Image (cartoon, rainbow, N blue to C red; front, side, top):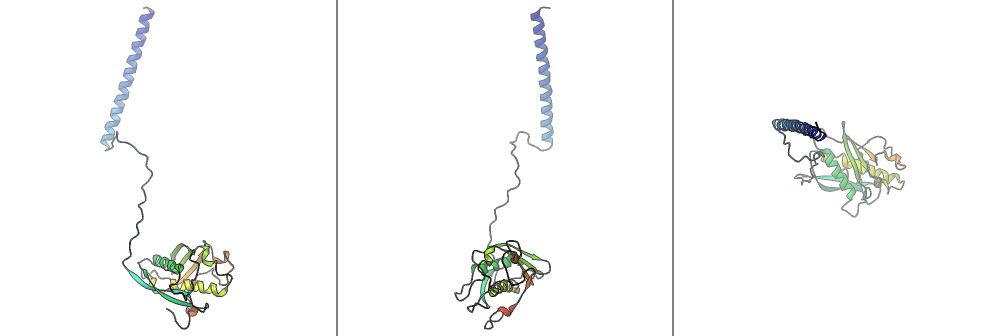
Length: 218
């Protein structure tokens, strides 16, 4: 056998081997496609990476129920509290109602005779209602920036907050009452942020003795 004939024979052998390999691969691919169809999959559909379900956009809804609540502000004498009636959106969530009341306190009084409890730059970081009636509120440090070491200003701010948030009018469900309030500033007890006079390491209960005698407990 000549060299030319031997080369041609080798070439034909390679082509036959390649053809057999190709047939085996096509057969395997056909089996894979058949199996995917049996499992209800679409083998030729465009596959895109999954990034998880997109969070739906929050769309606020208008509350259909409102309620009159008493907001406690500093009286004209600067040494007591007086109330202003404010109509706020009301829901069955005590926490949501307390947050609205807090935001209304931060917004400030509608009467020029009253002084706000805290700076309008204050923000509500968190509101939690614990079992047993303890409400935890976490405010930004602007809430205490204007106290200037005054024991009276501190007490008026604290009891203005507590008396507002413990009133029955903002209670949601029958079990979700607020008996006392724990105040945090930037996530910590206030004493870690400013040198306070009241002991705020424990929750504070309602105290209407700070309400001006001319008004009583609104």
